[in-house]
Length: 605
Image (cartoon, rainbow, N blue to C red; front, side):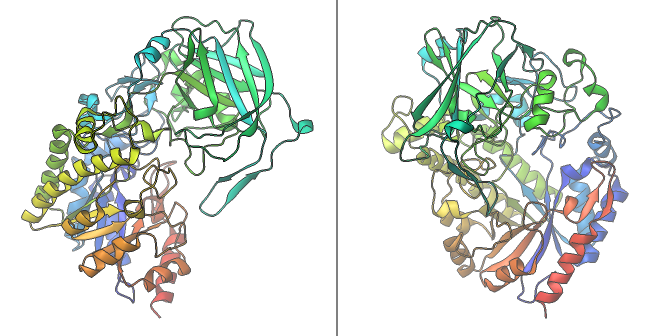
């Protein structure tokens, strides 16, 4: 399906989300015939990882059938044998190219279930917040191969064994501006003294982050107004001058010894904004302790299991996380999903929420993100590459973006032994003793990853196939930011690649940006120019379901950029087809199909 300007358009099939609606050979064949009839000549497939790790939400995982979840992934796997091969075969049978998308860092989001519970189809790995489930085979069996967080000092570790006696929450009384979408900002005007309402705080506690009980002791809550420096979850200053805050302090807390989880609910929370990752603090008898905080709460996908008390419930059947009023309703019997989507997502992390979850300490690892510096990790990735080549895919597109690296303070990760050693060799600094430059850590990690890409390229080229790699403008102009297209964005693995060397070894290149309907040709400008001058096709993204849709102005702007040779349509599930989940919805997305065809007709005049 080329455009008038010769740009190829190819759809992306994310296989595992499709499997939630029951798929057999007939259903897979129908989907490929549908894409062929639309005129597509190449299809990309995001492969299921070994072990079927969960992706962006808990529903994209293997669940027990007959629990009323509507998730039929397990039955689909039994019907298809190897879903990756089934899709490959049906695409090539129709004469289409079939490219595999491998996401090396997609080892599982690492959603949790409460401590002491069980998920029938997954191994459990202990962490702050409960037990991780639904990792891939590598991380399920070798959790120590994940990216490590900077270790705490011994004095802090000792303090974590002490009980929390005091909590503190600070709410902004001064104005701030926060991005809430690609082109929109929320403007908080601030509060005058007459507008301030001191909220009633209720304290809750839990042993397992599954069942929360109301605190029945006598606590003292005090309030004061104070000027403070504003910092985000990574410790970056957000204003030049201190801002005015309402500081609420909860004193005289005396919790059971084995209850490391707290929650606070606010009787009034409207217009009370905080950054929970930096403005909720806790103190033991000897000083402040690090915390993991969150506003996202687990929720039921199975109504049958949702009616049971936490201890009797079958876990691993959860739905999307919730926040706001729904979180305040559910947290008492479901607990918090900590470290979901990082701190900012769009802006600096300001939120107004009726409930906040609080856990003592920090997680030791970056969710399910494997560390590329370990030979075992690279061997595991290379084994996937060899398997994909043996299957007969026409090429492999390596996508950095993933759902395994959600953290609220990304600057503190990358402290695995090989990285520590390489940093000392390269810069003469022991980062266990002297503060590290996070960008230098990212660069070292990128060098290790590039060494994997070079080995992968050799395997792919020796098989007579092609390699494609995802890059973005942040590799040209790296900064410490968690905005959508930056290195610290929650879905990035937090590595800095040498983009020129990457383009040199690749046959085709993807510029992986969120454009949200506004194509900006200068983003990734040097990468596009360098790749196109070397005769390598450059692809950009168009999302059906994440803000772009299909519109004439957007595609026309891409059409004008002579360096671009392809457009990836993300993604077939919901974008072009309804594939049976949720609510057994099947069929074509006629609106998007008609829009796409109309736009292409207009472009090709």
